[in-house]
Length: 134
Image 1 (cartoon, rainbow, N blue to C red):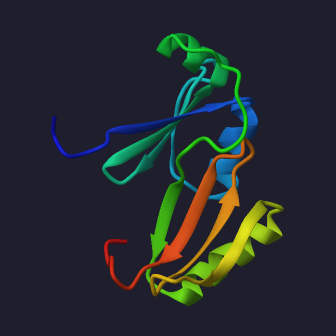
Image 2: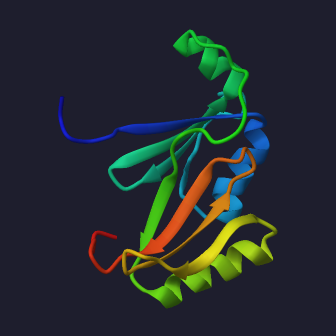
Image 3: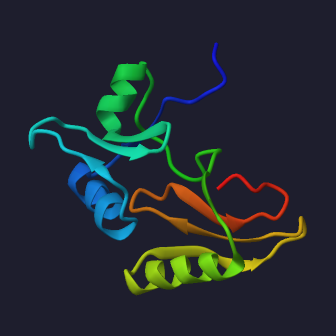
């Protein structure tokens, strides 16, 4: 297996709402698709983010769609400075996004906070002086 992730697919409860959040609030570049495609794609550099109805994604994987609480993973977006982290959180707050944990200095020497998308997937936004890949 090559060392890369091609797609991250999130099973969402409302595709139109989730698509709006990622396109309009997070301002990710959306790939044009027909209205009835039933999926949304966003280019994220060498990885793609896709949104797919949760029940259909579970059916495709052959697992039950029920479940709630912490999903056991987070998505992360690293930025180049503390100021950039604070600026993004200010934008998120003004857009009404749920801030799960406000940005703060971390015990590993960085600065990070968490927000939740409309389906409660957690995103960490961080400045990490030890991991310059942004």
